[in-house]
Length: 171
Image 1 (cartoon, helix red, strand yellow):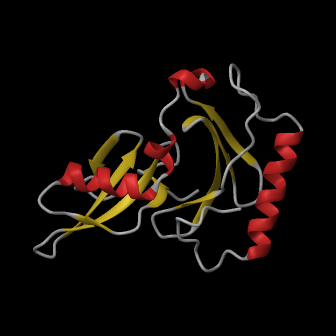
Image 2: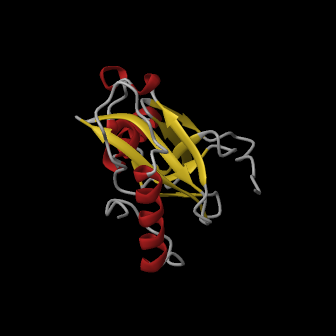
């Protein structure tokens, strides 16, 4: 099931979500995701990964245990396994806090604090900074003077989008 804390593009239907959930479950049952040093952890709530234009680029399934994020998997919109990544070699004791990577409220607060000057965040969108290998949350910030700025947040890091504009990825 997708996380209720994020917005799902309108072109994604309940049938699509059900198919993605079923595919992740099948891959998990087949042993596609091995987390060394962690107990058996099933994929968590699905999150859409959107490109800069708001189109679906991938689906992310986080593996969360005891408030930590030891791993995540990505599926393409065509339900092909794109990536399975381990944080800290999958070791739960060294994995980052799940909220740093998955909680939109924490992500928005991190962007606001990093930008300063009274910035207020709109709903973060899981995306990438330039190229898909740079998975990050895109956060639109609005400042008291009405200025808008895009920031990215990944884990405990936050940074402004390049002044030259985001690299456009067409893949």
